[in-house]
Image (cartoon, rainbow, N blue to C red; front, side, top):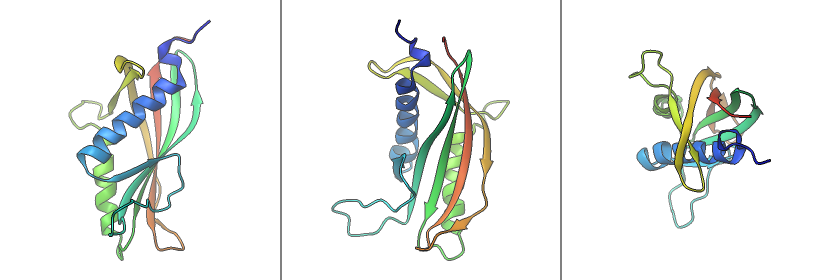
Amino acid sequence: MALDATAREANLKDSLKKYFVDSISTAEGLDLSFDKSMSRPKIQGQPVEVEKWVVVNFGAMEMGTLSSHQIQVICCSRKDNEGFKLAQLRDRVMGYLTDSTQTDGLRRIDLYQSQTWTKIGGILVTDIIESQQFESEDETKYKLLSCSLRWAAKV
């Protein structure tokens, strides 16, 4: 028996990738990667080093009538002595994880059947836990935004 489209991990991940590419990469022009370490992206043909980028890592998932998934959004900056670029990046990313036009402030992300890109539901960003600012050995400053996502699924 085949899984319902709302219970397929591939549809969830493709929908999230589409959302982050459309918003953070395309609309904001920021470098973005998925399920990678926070190492600075190497852009072929670009003479300038990337100074701000975002990494989205997929975590644990629990399937049920109200399914949940954990993701980590890592905001990273370089050549940022006081962390101001990181603060600006965090603010831009938080704007895509929350929604001030909703009375509850929660972001809704479309859930798609990825083969046809047909909308089949919605994903709600319910909680965001923000870390302190960290600095790695290569002087990359970063913050972790741990997000809880929920959506209705037919299991």
